[in-house]
Length: 186
Image (tube, rainbow, N blue to C red; front, side):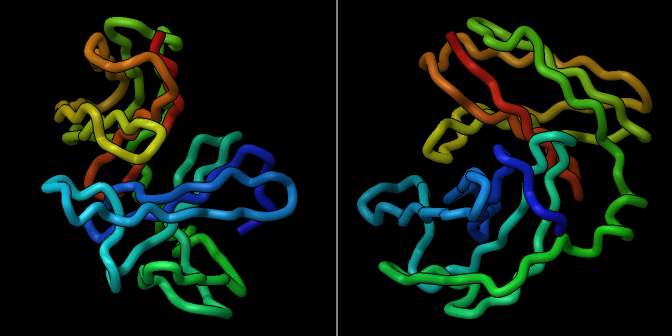
């Protein structure tokens, strides 16, 4: 992995692919607090003790999310309450093979900021199904919808009139890719 740009992000995902922590590069390092699951809630909102996690890197200039391979100098990729894990090296996982399978590209959101609905436009190299998710600033999925897309240009309408004003992430995934954009709701 090259030196990150200011504003790039690392995200931590639980075993169910929920974002449970994220950190923005500040010019010198990443610090990522991880949310613990609330055992009194029936909805999983964080990590359980001894649960495995994965990391990904979002490049703010290219809008590409890359899975990461990590070598640990302290701890590992298992959540532990009040634990600490420190990396000794981070690399993009199998970058050359991943580029051969890029299907989704040119993700755009408009209008942004939005109030009652917004549109996602993207290009695809093949027909496929995508999942569109909206995640709030604490990592909770507040909206999810499935859409079929076709080869070429696609436009997806996403309702957002039931969301509170604030900052969100829109995540578009297919079977092996994930694209992320920031969204502001007025």
